[in-house]
Length: 411
Ligand SMILES: NC(=O)c1ccc[n+]([C@@H]2O[C@H](COP(=O)([O-])OP(=O)(O)OC[C@H]3O[C@@H](n4cnc5c(N)ncnc54)[C@H](O)[C@@H]3O)[C@@H](O)[C@H]2O)c1
Image 1 (cartoon, protein in one colour):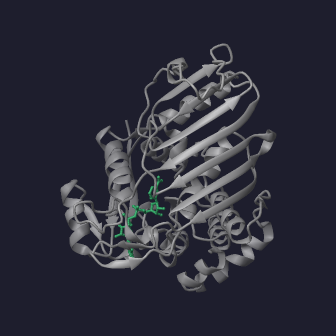
Image 2: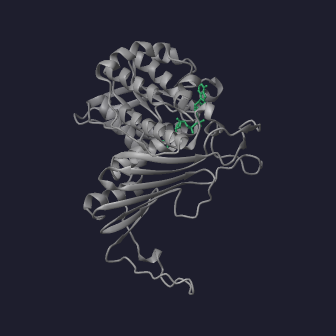
Image 3: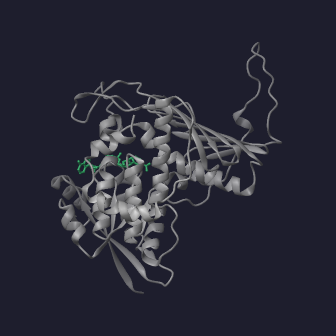
């Protein structure tokens, strides 16, 4: 069997997502599995090079995981013709510039969401990648959660009948850092608007592909956000002003008349079965999914409650739901990496491209606009500028300072 080496430049891998999900659970796990065998029998073996600004940190990370190559010099790494893919899981604000550099260096692109902090920058990157004819992909990990895969299965079986509404509840308490015994679980930039933070930017881009793929294409959004904790403490122990939204409540109209409402909050304490849950109600049945589990209740099993505040509840509502059985699910990030590698190496179909990522940013902008203008915002079909794309590309090299690009689309 022939083995082909696949050089992958990995940026942002000292971060939360980069280390755990992309390096350890995906690329290294694929290597430990013996690579990926293509349809023609060729084995593809990833060969990552880790890139980061802090030489000590990146060297430590590489050594800890037995990765042979690491560097602090991104330009040099991109100049290496033997490395075909550029991956980024750095902060969101840096992403469009990094992707632009990598596309110009002829690399295929794979990255975390959101692909940019505003739609204009997102579309420029899409156009550039299209013009260069490079393969590109964005993480849409929620689609590969076992709980959501079970919902998909129920939908495909016609279990719901006509789907009516979806209620999503996402979030947990993120400690503000003001008590040393309870350090914050998320990076401080997440709570600064000027650094690309905000729960709407972070989460609404996920909801776009979840809603589009599982329940119906998003047609409009009505959203209200809030900054509920005005001050937090950063990684250095310094108190900073939280300028970004840390909670938001959004209602979406979907194709087919389905209504979806999603609460998202970093200022809520969990009293549900998981960190995110989706309840789907249809004429023939309902289901509730978390990250891994999913329960269902058909029309026949639906209880007939009567409102009576004078007596304690007699119905065990939770007892009337059936578990949807498990199947063999692999880590969703790894599954998507494998799909992308096949896309690059044997041209296998891959639908989670940068344009899909741009749709997420489009919905973020619409949600922010809705909040700002206190009204429902329509979400039109996103069109790739055919000729315009080519014209837009050369300007990209003189991209505006990050802060300016961000101000365009943010509240
Ligand atoms: N798919 C998901 O479920 C999911 C979850 C969380 C975060 N994300 C996305 O992943 C990305 C990273 O998020 P995170 O939580 O891992 O953040 P993080 O702060 O933990 O990591 C950010 C990485 O970028 C690097 N970095 C930061 N500033 C830099 C600079 N100026 N120059 C060079 N490198 C710099 C850091 O060293 C680190 O490696 C974000 O875009 C975020 O939206 C996705």
